[in-house]
Length: 482
Image 1 (cartoon, rainbow, N blue to C red):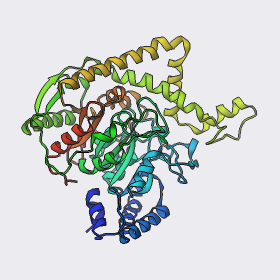
Image 2: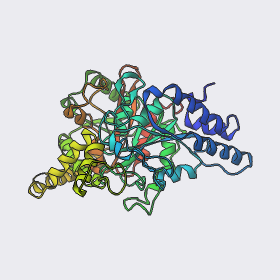
Image 3: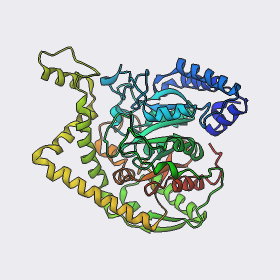
Image 4: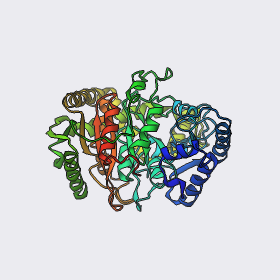
């Protein structure tokens, strides 16, 4: 039996029952990582440290000690999450050799539950992008079809899970960066409520929208890691105590359906230029939810069409501010070509930052200029409030909302890397969730390997339990399905 083919839950159970050792689990995944390195899912592999940790866990189990809920499970992290002693590059030349002196809170929580950090995954540079093509370390390829993009910016994390190089992975989601690549790679991706998971130690793209997200091959596995990470953190001022109670009593071993569940579906879904395959599968998905007992009703959300523009004004403004720290002086890449401090700043950033990052810094700086701030930035803040209010109104009437995760299937590598309109519009159904600070899940629907399609369910703040139940029901009640 290939132990990389079983679920994360089963890996944990087999480890506890001494049917497989932690060292064997790590080695099996390391072998897959070596075989599939052409997919370029990983930037850094934590081989020696992971094997040493696995040996310690094997000894701990043999001693009869109590084991954590993630014991024996290998886990990868998007490479914008700080790991003490392991380089954290953010997919950029700017941080190519940066080694953090501390762990992010999510790393501490994983290790406290005996999870094994096995590698750091590829991403769009500084999590800015929708295809993982802007990474300084090269594009990640989609295991469904190596000629297709993996999506982004958490493409490395979703590819690692889909290709069985990893059973579980963490990404970050600022406007759909977990859910969109999850849809493109036919895996599950969850973006929790803003503040549900600590962002301490996560390199910020846009502080008011960033959220750590979880990727797995099925909803049950994904919820296991999500529950582990939803904890209050005093080092993150946006972290909420309430998050600890949300999944406390959720039983993922039950078979759920949609009976009694009110589901809101956009009646204007056809106005968003859906690919024919996406439109067809979404229609089938809605019918499936009805057949499972869901009370499906069409809804209108007038503000949704403004979400991408609102998102890009606000997110680029925050990008401009956040990335100002990478100046060649304090840490990171430093140009050798300078005579003045101004030249040091300019040349270091010019040489070390990629095209898409520079584009968004420039746009963000423009909207923050005194003469432009009121016209763009302040208007976008008002639109954000309208979007959040409309989501709140809809979710007071419905348990969950249902949309396609993306309007398109993944396109070929290199074909749209400079087409900002296509790249930005791939997030049209996801960015509103981040603007509103609510939670959402992407679950695979179309199992045709040539055309991955994800279905998104959206719930209100701190209603991740509703997402998990909807996801389990959508998988058909078979919680063990990979």
